[in-house]
Amino acid sequence: MAYNKNTVVKIADGLTSLALPGAVARTQNGFVYHFEGMPFGMISGYRAKKDENGNTIYNRDSGLSIQSAFTSLGRGVPPLTLGFTNTFRYKSLSFGFLLDGKFGSKMYVSTNAYATNYGLHKQTVENNVRETGVTVTGVDTEGEPFTKNISAQSYYQGIAFSLTDQFVSDAGFVKLRQLTLGYSLPQNIISKTPFQSASLSFVARNLLLIYSQVENVDPESNYSNSNAQGLENFGVPPTRSFGFNLLVRF
Image (tube, rainbow, N blue to C red; front, side, top):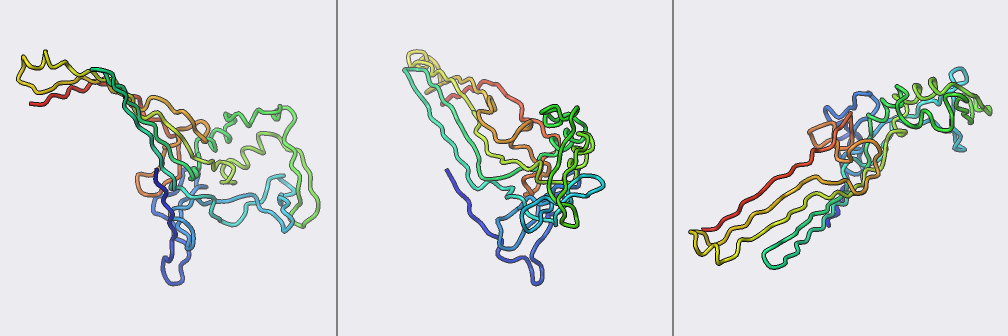
């Protein structure tokens, strides 16, 4: 188990934030920034704007929330990494496994944003909203109480690429990363060969996602191959692999 605690102490004189090159989701609504005084690599974007009393501020004409100022929404780099491995042996047989996981980070899930925009996410049908619409309550831009019912299509298409935080999720997970089953040839057989020992193992990797805080996508998906972690865009899970290992010693 390892825990990484870090802080961006200083970027440059007169500069308190810095965008990482290429760290922009295709929705153009999810970003990775460094902010002075915060951990390395913060997912950033927009929330619904609130007044001083915590009420959501809505556009009276559209019924959609006003976009907040640009802000950080959570660290993209997981601070906690853990793993557990063990091997059991009985005579010439061995059985091993590896569990690993990461916790404490966030992920901006573009897949869910696009699914919401096109009416493919489950939230666009929950509670019969397609028939009854979505009722929003808060205040308008003048601070007056505001309530309005708008169609599900208008509401979800309105927030899909506007409110970044609606698609930022905790990204913790635990995976069954590897299983091995081995057999060591007995010495009465090995003694008749030029080998000192020989073993054959069956190895399976990326077998199972045991626990995930992210819905619909693999929690290790990453839109960028740089150190800008925390953005996802139609990520696909890693494939399972199965194979055999032959180990001989002369």
